[in-house]
Length: 461
Image 1 (cartoon, rainbow, N blue to C red):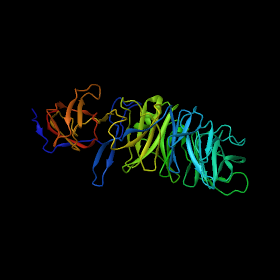
Image 2: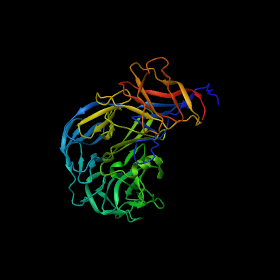
Image 3: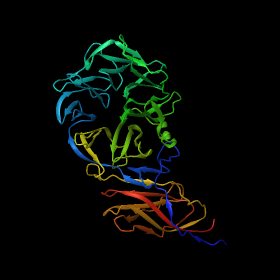
């Protein structure tokens, strides 16, 4: 009979991984929830608890937009738009989150629209754009380029304003069609010095060609991008990069980053599975640049999921509210003090978001790490004598641990580890051939976890 052997050097359990769901749900396999990964210059990986929320401004009504313009914070709650908390006008609230832009000139203007109605504000008067030449129907998004404001109307025509730096007057002849492919428009945006027309299964690029009549825009030859847009509400910009939930003519969703006119799919196969059967009827998205990381956060409400992509470390995670449902944030901006502000979907609150906040508005949210199935490189029976936890020593920080030896079908009872101690560990951790672990943190503290070391004896097959 084969004798058991001792593994003298503890094996390190992998804690850094992208979602590994085998199908269109997150019910099984590896995933990180309410956390993100940081790769250090020392070639170490740490898992951090996501930033929390604390109330900053409270109003009444659903949140449908927030923006920083000239150092002032503009927010829309219900049918009212506020400037630094003071109402300045009334807006349409029928088509979700607004998109904002602005013009320069002698009278700078804030411009906003939701695809149903558009408005302009010149620091004195807030009014709907009612010019007869303004598109009667338009897609979300703006492109301000060389003094002209552009909007996109059905089916995929880009129309420009009449007078430079005046989004309240529009020219019916300032029109160019995005027609390399016969798909309809979805959203309009801008990157660098280019106007970007996102359509159903393609994206087209335009530049200021200086045409003396008609539209100043001209198509960038050869810049046809073979990715369309699944939802205008998924389109966001961060550091001159565009990112959105994409769609192709073959109907396969992904997430695409457009950087210097080069498009790249960033969704892993597992994330693509989550998007494949998603209901894109109601989508929220926002970006966050914090602690050296750049996050794109995408919520698909009717599928009850929020996923966050870290463009810095190219990792995905799932973010939830304290109850485990989608994170109900619809927009984000930064104030003059470089504080991050995020807007809640329904409760009328504009929150500050920061790594120092350990809960969401007073309610602790859980951090969950579900590891891949682990066999230590051998299918021999293993007796785990000890688990050592390498984490920040934080008083009051409790990590609960359980395991599954049958491919995530059933779980052991939770055992608690006090991360406030000098050398946190668990002993007598049982015998297994292959095991998945679930680490659950629900303490009102920060969390930074580097690794879990396993001291095991190998048995027979």
